[in-house]
Image (cartoon, rainbow, N blue to C red):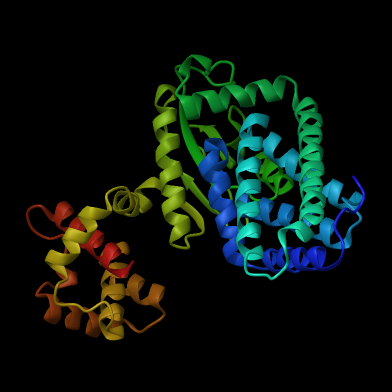
Length: 382
């Protein structure tokens, strides 16, 4: 890297700004938004995965500039790991750079804004800004080189199969089923989980993938396509694995899209463990058409006040009761209360709304009735 061009008050001011930004969660959030907005493949990755990578890159630049010694060997190894992750996740180099450059621009814009609040003349900052830009430029070069090396290492028959699987699931290219190792006349389950450490993901994929199935990272998520009758295993305690019922191979793209929607909806609500699509169908619908949930809440829950803690408790109890099929014992167990407590809360909910949750799902149109109430409660509680 070039030698230090900025000294004195200018470098001190810029160093304080850079150090402050590194610890500011709002800065991280803004840079993450910029990167995901500029690159659709990056936006398709789990947000916390993008956040983890950008936080690491901001830390590398900050440390390299503040120390004045450029990128260390440790920094270079970190950048290489991040580049390898993106290559393994199927993000192209162009897409990676689109996100990186957008994040770089957002960070520089924030730096300029914060420098405006200092009394240091622009001329005194010029050399230090060039030094900072050189740090970022070196980081970009290391990222590109590491990505190309990682992509070359991933080449091979397994990589070709994974590329075909991604084409089938993401782009609906069912003509590539055979190239993905799947039978065109086969019937398969599709399962999707949010990815974390790529090493752990590869281990999980090996454990979950049965004979006749295929797996890999698709849009940054662990995806398993398995023959009919497959039973999913367990992932890490904080992970959510969404599984679809077995469908003909040609329907796998639709099953994948629904699993992704259900995974996102479930994660937003703190769900972990294994879940079938049916378990998350309502929350997927709620997220897809939020306006309908709002209107249902206005119509059905007008007597409840969202700011009233007691009303929220009653609504939560009614929602859990619906989730457990109206079974009193299961509801009580889920809420960690006595069944009599559940009865008392449901009675008070009925008094407030004019509808007894214990009678949801009875009579003509019971399915639609239950779905509407659950949809209204989901929106109201959210």
